[in-house]
Image (cartoon, rainbow, N blue to C red):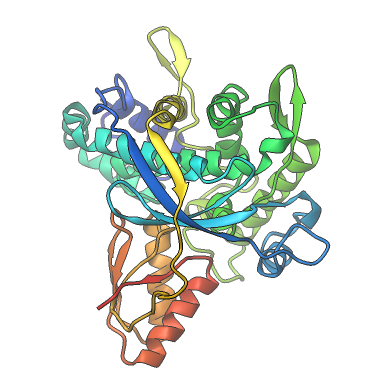
Length: 387
């Protein structure tokens, strides 16, 4: 285990710390036997602009917040679904040509891999033995603060990558969900997201049911089009320039970019290759391989069906102070929600990222509704609970 790392933004050192924690055996502990499950979902079509493929809110977001990405490069999902997973947690996602099976089973794969992390006694031991200097370096360099949180976020990011790129299934040679997952991994698309996209772009476009990318196929594998690579790099450079311009308001979680030397580009901590057993691999490869293997295995154990909606007795929203935010995934999300509610005078809420529940004290029904709308305006879903 590494000792006494330098206490500044040494991303190479942090990558080495994470790798040493990850191997041997990250996510390789035995999985619980898969149970056959039926999961029902509710579905609604995504509103589109007349004559185009983007909804009005999507188009506005692209033009205002994704410059210099051209709108023609962005593909929208066809439907939006909501469901409760095997733990009873509400979820929301968007779907493409392959339908609801991709996001629903991707969520189940995420839950299984999170459970493996929680049950990994060896990982817990190695993490507990980290020197104080390594703990401080992780906290100073990574958004998620601890190594286990980094691994959890990486699993969730792998799921989002699969779900988003399923919008492009018609541009690939892959005919079903299993082929798509394996094909994306073999083509290096998970790797491309980690290295080419800027932080936050995946999460923000995922919540809005979009992907700023297109595929070309070569020798049975897919890769990003030239326009895609150019646009992603330009958007990342724009975010770097914004973060390093002290005259502009700082972006959320941009401190890691402000510490970079002029002209230096950030490297994905999980992507950095390391030598292991006389070969080279990375934390990203370990997480991606485990996720794809788990997703494909669980496909055979899940029946996904559209629920019958009872329009005669629609659910009604209440002024409950406990509500769910299905697309809340990390500390960045909790800080965003805290900020928008704080602007309305609401005290910092309590969050549970596992159950996706938020507890907030609103001064009035009006403030509650304004708070919910403010959260939705940032691209999140709000699901009020019954009293």
